[in-house]
Image (cartoon, rainbow, N blue to C red; front, side):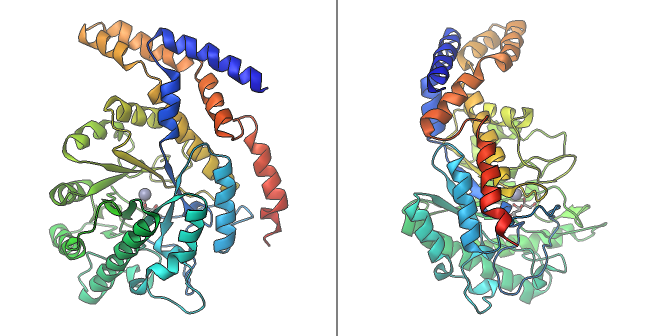
Amino acid sequence: MKKNIKDQYRFARDIYGKIGVDTDSAISKLKDKSISLHCWQGDDVAGFERKKGGLSGGIQVTGNYPGRARNISELKQDMEKALCLIPGKHRVSLHAIYGDFGEKPVERNEIKIDHFQTWIDWAKQRNLGIDFNSTLFSHPLSENGFTLSSKNNEIRQFWVEHIVCCRKTAEEIGKKLNRPVIHNLWIPDGMKDVCIDRIGYRRLLLNSLDEIFKKNYNKNFLRDALEPKLFGIGTETYVVGSFEFYLGYALKNNLMLCLDLGHFHPTESVADKISSLLLFMKEIYLHISRGVRWDSDHIPIFDDTLRELFLEITRCDALDRVHIGLDYFDATLNRVGAWVIGARAVQKAILYALLEPKKKLLEYEKKKDYLSRLYLYENLKTMPFNGVWDYYCLISGVPLDSDWLLEIHKYERTVQSKRI
Ligand code: RNT
Ligand code: ZN
């Protein structure tokens, strides 16, 4: 088997070599690219607060597949299992509601580093990075549809305080791990129907952000991203944190934008935004998700959208300026398997992009030889990509595509099915 894979790799290396692509170097770049595994796929975005309400804020998980992680140790165990089946070294993305809060309720504006110490210890042991997200949904003070843009000053202030302590916590995590933590901010604010005072709410959001970001942190430990959205459930007509709003704010304040693949019009190309943003913004954060007709948060697969996105990133030679995070929640199937499919799909898309013969394609383009350009672009799809991917899995010590499902079945039988 091993020999077979090596033979297949040699074969693939020769074929790619003929069009000017170095497969060894593609593999080594892929190896260096970490993905942030989102903890919330493991428990349907529930979190570990003592006072738990339902999921709210225009996001929704459907399905009730058995085996959901019910506490921090089960969630860690599940993420460890997933990470064994994903090649490379990665990060985990935590939401503020996933702290280790102990027995007494901790309000969102009281969150501190202590609540994340067990996560930090775990990350250190496993050489994982951490990303952090403030949580402005699933809370009584977000129920009326507004948080940072609320016209109620107390509510607005509460959420400002929440983010202030989340950023502080994130920076301290960064210091403890000695690597940057990306803090991402998404808010659910908006209206279902005709909104007259659009500018009023946006002005309030602007004021809140100014209060939050007046505190500067060392970028070696904390980097901030803002996540825009086109619409959500209950915010069909108006979302305060729109693309234009955050684009302006991020550029003015030297922050990142977080592009969630489900947050745009279905016919809009997120791939096409990359080259424009990179001319004005140092870094970009991604929330990889798969929208099916709307922001449905399906598991990413190795599809055109994902390929085009990473092709653009590698064409801009910007793999190091674009940070990858996963963001989806599917409870209709094994949740650990969901992480594995999504993460591996992203890695395939990165590899596919790294194997593009950019020089050749550019030559054709320059000569206006558009038939040759399209011919090569099309033929790439049936090149022996799998020979390179399988080899990468082999040298990374993880199962091939043909084998990892068995591991999930075994884990489900021996671990997850016992959680009743
Ligand atoms: C919601 C945003 C946001 C959330 C997570 C849980 O539409 O995509 O990123 O999915 O923070
Ligand atoms: Zn997102």
